[in-house]
Amino acid sequence: MAEIKSIGVVGAGQMGSGIAQLAAVNGVDVWLHDTDADALNKAQDSISKNIQRLVSKGHLSQGVVVDASRRLRCTSNVEDFGSVDFVIEAIVESEDVKKKLFTQLDRIVKGSAILASNTSSISITRLASATSRRSQVIGMHFMNPPPIMKLVEIIRGADTSDGTYNVTRVLAERFGKTVICSNDYPGFIVNRILMPMINEAFHALQTGVATKEDIDTGMKLGTNHPMGPLELADLIGLDVCLSIMKVLHTGLGDSRYAPCPLLVQYVDAGRLGRKRGIGVYDYNTRAKEIKP
Ligand code: NAI
Image: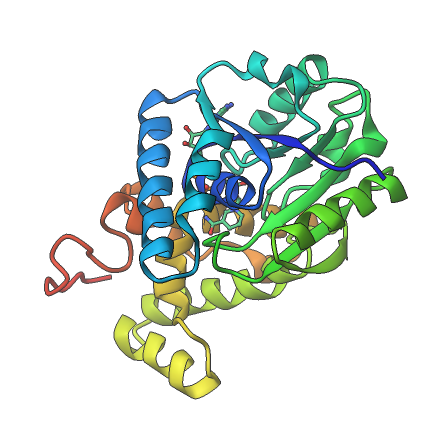
């Protein structure tokens, strides 16, 4: 099996920047691409701060930091991906936008390269259909934040080969992750179960069952979750949660997956969660009460 020496990461948002960091500190050369120059600058900044934090806590040596910064290169031109062995796509959760990117990547990268998507819910089989290398397309779903969370969910599309699966699994394990494998159904394993719970928490908030704090505390202390569903939604991004619910609703064809109107309203209002400073909670003025 060929060893992965270099990867390209598309999308320098919260997931893409974390994945690029993971790869660089684990000895893989990384190109990180985003169409938004601002996102690239922020990603570079947050990666170097995160790495320094790991050094100060004694989790990384200064030698690894020097090596990682040499390995990481940022680019606003995806054509730079010509020589990479493996691509991980982490752009907006939209099938149309991802398909266009996969078609473009299929043209740019070398014939042996694998194209992986970090999608939370979208069909890998349909993303693969936008390329001429269906057997080399796979889902590689990191959890948020990628450098910390222990799991990678690998999703095999209808045509994903055993070779592609094995290379992806070895790469995830090299990053120190535990792998689970899902078949290609909407939301796969984790979001098939997690997102309806988050959606239900929005229904509970909308119908006045309890305050957001009590809903979150109830689920944290009552079910031993590290975060409540509403604060987790803010971490994930309410836009991402809404996109996943729409995929579940359309793909599974059952009204129980319909997105909660309050979730839709927050996204319409630009309250996307921590990344915008406001979602269910207000991160600018934590004391300020936000009425649902
Ligand atoms: P984000 O909104 O933080 O970042 C997305 C980035 O992609 C932005 O910087 C944007 O400029 C860039 N982008 C958009 N279209 C592009 C294109 N055509 N070419 C290059 N760059 C482009 O989003 P986030 O949260 O990082 O999510 C990315 C993907 O990861 C989505 O598919 C999402 O479902 C998935 N995911 C998200 C998780 C989360 O907790 N937020 C967890 C696991 C997966």
